[in-house]
Length: 428
Image 1 (tube, one colour):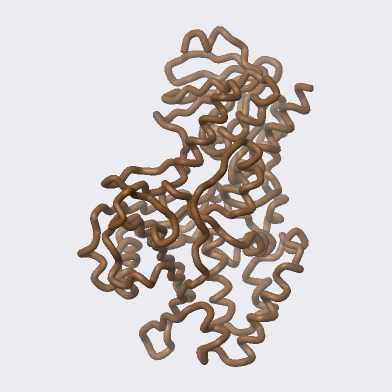
Image 2: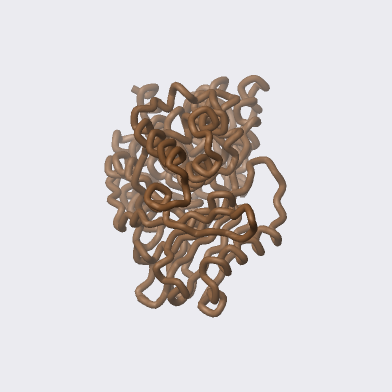
């Protein structure tokens, strides 16, 4: 690593998750000298995948929107897997106690909804594609649905779909534009072998383009501004660069900067509110009800999915990867033990006898979904910082909390490309 400190890099990227790897490829393709630093001993960040008894398991349920394929293909990545079938179930509370589980399609064909409620649902979906999400960024999802769907049962069905698409249970806070935009993205895709296969392809492409990657390199500080910037590692090694791209979270990025940003420029970082979920990841033998592969809570912020019903995660055909999740309210404390019991009771209801089928189990009580909710009161996408950091020439950012495009992985990819293009434009 000493030789790395003797060079002056065109760009040093902090964080080798999907955003960092993607940006490094775009930059290196143009001949830039790129150094990619990762504090962990392996690449990928939240896209890393764990080997649980010979079965690959993502950190919670990961679904890839097909709209993300374009940028992935630009950097040489071709996801392999399949799209889940549209045969999900909805779990509703009954007014007289107990729950009812019904196929989503039965909302239109069965007797659960009245004709007037079915009409509301049909009209909502008929107008979905025609809605411009950028015109409703300042409206909360709760306000938006209240004016269009008088039926609480219909609203709850749509909220269940929004939770799956956004991983967020805060309709009073979430921008309607962001939520509707996610619903418009359409079909999702489960990746064979977990998201580590995406990370591996990104790594191979980065190395092929000449990116230098160093794992186990924790950053202590980012010093200075263009054209004299330094990245100081926690072992006091100093790396010199013209520009630095940070792909870690907003508050972590702020904590690294020397000197600190002015208060006005730092506010957009400080105001971020992360979105989290409580997730139970299981490797099991066949489930007691094998035909039940996907369940959403309509009145509950709960989710169940057997990802092995769609994609391959193990050479052992008898192993299944099960994800059960509770969407946590952003900014609110949650009882980890109580959340775990709630997930277990949910499974007891839809898959009675599941406990005897468990091979490996992992509970993530506060899984980070995204670094910042797309909030209506702050203007939706418009409130997110741009990749070019105001008040610090030479500093750039990328990640799921950056840029005016998309959410989750789509935002990470779009901001990584945008940051790379901004850097190249400055350098040219």
